[in-house]
Image 1 (cartoon, one colour):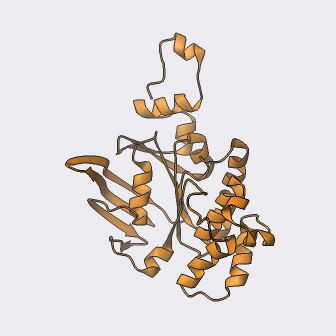
Image 2: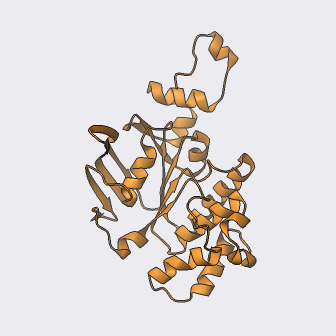
Image 3: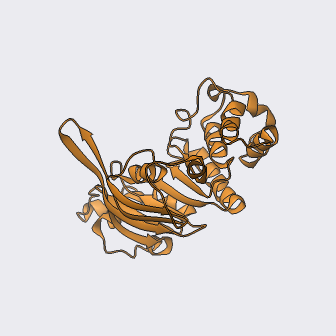
Length: 259
């Protein structure tokens, strides 16, 4: 469903060039949820934004459903891929009600039955009918992220890109959103890419995981191998150690985390 070949992204600040992503390649099968993991600054979110067309790539061969996807994209291309941002408060317009937010994509694409579709979208993400009249500041963080997810799915996209959708939420709410995404994946049957720095979050939703460091793809491995620590890459081993938290025994053996 998604075929990325030799993706590179460079940001420029005056004469200085920063290679955020260098030569990244991977494939995502139809119906699969693929994870990308790495520490902050590893380039994982930049890969996601390049796929969405939010940042230009220097060179890349991107195919979606077997069709080349370039920089210029029409309405049909935009409808095919939808994006859920990390910060639900920042991604929602502060002066638009929930109804305005969810109805806007339908109006842009001239889809009929807006009222019914907005009501169904709210129900799908576990929100009540009265939520449609509220503004973002009147919602909790978890509710705002549910609205953002509903907005992304209301067009029934084939591909959903998730940029750390739980990292801005309280720990108690993260599990609710992860379980919601797991249920929606089964009902909407979308192909997904989930970016996170949290291995546990990615392992909950994804079957395969790409590990990134310094803008490069270190390795791709399935979740079961990751759970059993079946990797020889030092960086992946460091990520696994960091995800387990601080260990006095490891520190005394002279193996502090190198992250």
